[in-house]
Length: 389
Image (cartoon, rainbow, N blue to C red; front, top):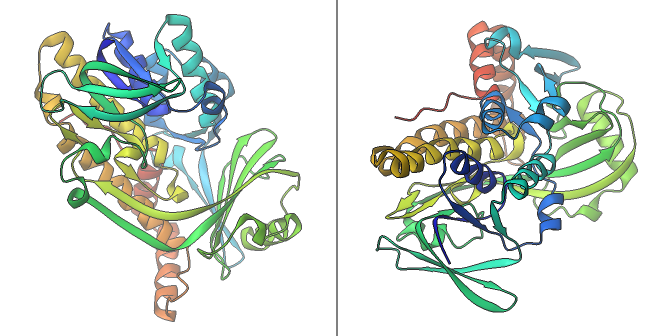
């Protein structure tokens, strides 16, 4: 098999890239190791920045997002028995964020891909990449226990932290920078209406907590927990009691549909390309969920990368593609900085001193008392601009 662009991974990044290329007449094939049903039902992120919404709408796959997405006009911070609201619309030129699940978004892209005949090969595990230093690299994958190959002009790795794409880049270990945080997040998906149409972040002596909408009757909660926590460490009643305490509100209790413990870390690979292999999304970077940046940062990568590939195939111009790492990393590191800032401001390190706690409180007080700080926060949360130079 041959194609112009071989894409590893049918997550939001890979599906969006295939769609943007298709719209300009560039051929691609997606190789995905999981089943179609599994990919359609993965519960991951759920908050889209304004920049992400704009790109999805322009791709032609935004009808359901427009109809069903739930706009968050701002964010509440609850701490010291006080509530503070930051209004994105007022502070950031009417930019907002939208609650729309990754599950729904992926389903929209797969449906549209199948309608248009875009090829997605499910249950095909990428095994290795060969001929990477030639103009026709080959992607080898296993389907139905048979090895097959895909010859490409370019290979794009959107296959996550554990995929083969990043580790196929020479010296990737030396280029990878990582921080492990001394705490985790306990994530809960509840069949219950949220108590607010906007995100709530709680700062509490027991640790951080977050509430976010996933639908009119679906709410996502997170609360800080030790790194050795398991899902069985907390009963349902204990979870609800702790969320009420940390958020400082009485939550609407419903059936808990899903529980997971998420170790927190930041990771960036400072080399996003080697010859005709490029990486994007979780292959290239990971951030804590605190700032809702994971999927959005991946979409930012694809915005730059898709334009570079289109310039190459349509205009015979390699400049943007050759500078993909340099351009994308500028925004990636700013996003990582904001996620790190949100995490270290709201989470309590088990070993932190009284000085550290006072610095967190002073940071929050400054945020709510400064128009400049509110504007900066809103710009980061609703989405930094995507630059292509």
